Image (cartoon, rainbow, N blue to C red):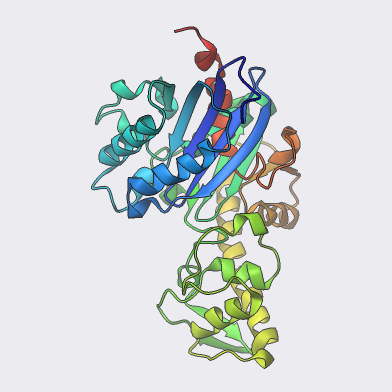
Length: 355
């Protein structure tokens, strides 16, 4: 491409452990395009380079200004978060040599790569949720962000233009239920529950990685096709029959076509149990005294269809984050990749500053 050469491209990046997401803004802050690539970062930073190059090939060949946030520093290929943050930033710079790069450090603001230290790396680590919440707080004032992704769920309250969370680290957020480690694709079924209803009787699951929640939502025909980027647990097909076979294996059952209705009922039971986890966490957050009135729920992430259902179940107004922006037709949307869009939106004044 070569049709956008008058100004630097403004790009936001959300570098996760399983996916790389990017948002391209124009100088007025309007989204032009959203991108997502599989990026199994636990296999090494070469996977990040490959994912970035795949997105880079779809962009105009032009100078870029970048804002980035991340959660990929958490993968077990790194010994600690500082090592992960620095390795990711170094890989990023090697892909974009000479380009302006700002790294989001949450409450500490923006850092140039050369200013990252062991001390401030902890503010950079896993701060993507805060970027999205800050962007919403600035424009919507009062509500709760419910971002349900492939792997995790963030529940982030904001009021009077300020994010009102009680925790900022992963450890604190897990304890406070502002972070729930469950999502709609990569979460192993055995992480949702140890027991299920099957053909009217309670039975127990094998502690094996035979199936994940993508199998559940494929069977229920709720998983958006563009969101289904991760490998299946057995490396086989992403069909209803193959998903049913993986789920039934969790029960020690072999699949045959007559069992498809029972497998779909099993999937519904697993969804109900995941929804119960999310509902409990959401109630815990919205019951805090700081939220003096019922909040509007803002849904983001590829699993935001669950956020809509949770809002309906708890009598809350729901707004899909996609309603807040308009972009050209694209498989991925602002709500799918909200942190990437948020980080470049927040960084816009700094990115447009003359060097």
